[in-house]
Image (cartoon, rainbow, N blue to C red):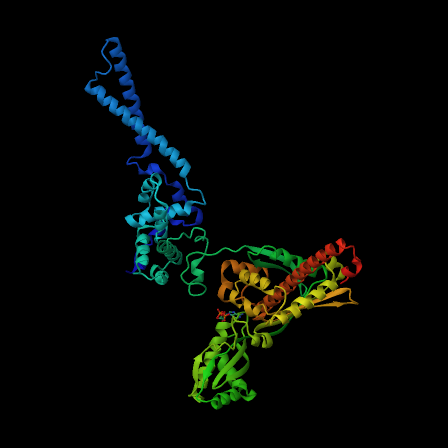
Length: 586
Ligand code: ADP
């Protein structure tokens, strides 16, 4: 079925049908009433029975008075009196039932906490009857009025059940086809030609298939076109992460307000405190040491000798220019910088490193690598390309090669924090910080056999800034490689603190950076998109901001740990009335 050609009806639907957000998804459930089960609208039924009740009551009282006056025995009733009596009883029962229903409704009205279970039960009824929302409401009464054994209810809950989100007739058909499997969920965008609608249909189908509500996951308020073919396949909504601001971070003479997307309490506040300490001490300096993204394919030969021959060829400086021309032809920005090879038996791992402008560069470097592999195939027909990535790159895995050689941007960031600031802002002492850094970040990490983890919590800051600015969060692994150094300077009064981070992988174009929210955060930092002055300068500044923020985070957490230790020690020694002077300076 070519759904795309059909008119897109959902655009003309009432809002209540179109909107599938959390609150609106809840509304139909909250509005369901037991009285919906009545065949007539409630006000008509009420009117009818009220009129009947009072008119037959009036008629019977009138007849009663007549009988008393004429001395007719009360138990002798005419046909009309009998009919009136039956009507009175019937309307009385109705009215009793009506107030009873109202009472029941008032006690079973779903609370936000309980709606999901009710939803599942009512949905179950809908799947059985294959009818849209109204029967669901009708079916609610037996469910409420009869007390089902708990086991039955539990069984019902387990069965897959659809939600009762409103869908247009046409979308309803498509949802059913997706549920049946006759339209693959992944093909909805291409079939419907409307990314938002595709997401809504997929979401509804998913809820019906799994019987689980997605009500907390928003659907509206997101541009689904912007992620098509770029950022995320088969979307059903988006996750919200709060963004906090740390700063101003005074770095290389410029102030930055650093956006951090996180759900970890205190992280932004702590980084903010670190920024304050850096600011009060005159700012931090960050130096870019290296800028190159890597990709390392694995190729196999019939012998180690042949693999070694290619290694020699690739590492010979005489051949570099030729290889660079081949590599560079697929991009305006990707420029080959170096090739480094490693052999394992007859397998060769070729680590290409190139500059990538403002892009993080994985696509760019991969394209260049493919060019070179195609080129080499002519002279090395016995070379088997086993994989364009052979893990010697190394992407999204802890690896010494990144720690030693660097990947992406290699930076070092430093600051001298005045003794006064250490005490007033960080609430500790220079000596305590230096000692703790040696014991924790250096010795402790060495004892743990750390790989690039010589820091307190670099990955906290890296991840939060990455999420806010549309970086690849999985690259937080190598991007968080960091050694934090602390040293007492100026006759032991001030603190020299530095973070050295060899593999910060960031970009300001491509991937998630072009999405509205992430792009706004990049804009806040003044590094949105491609740099017009000098290609690559935006992403390089972003790398320095990441390192500067890590510096702030390290300072603050280390200070908190050192201060905590001091407080504990103070208490201990206070109680034992020992001399405090030694402790405070330790
Ligand atoms: P990545 O290589 O990080 O995956 P993409 O390939 O998604 O990045 O995005 C890079 C794209 O952006 C390339 O097509 C490149 O030509 C383009 N581009 C535009 N301006 C720049 C720039 N200043 N630096 C790098 N790439 C840029």
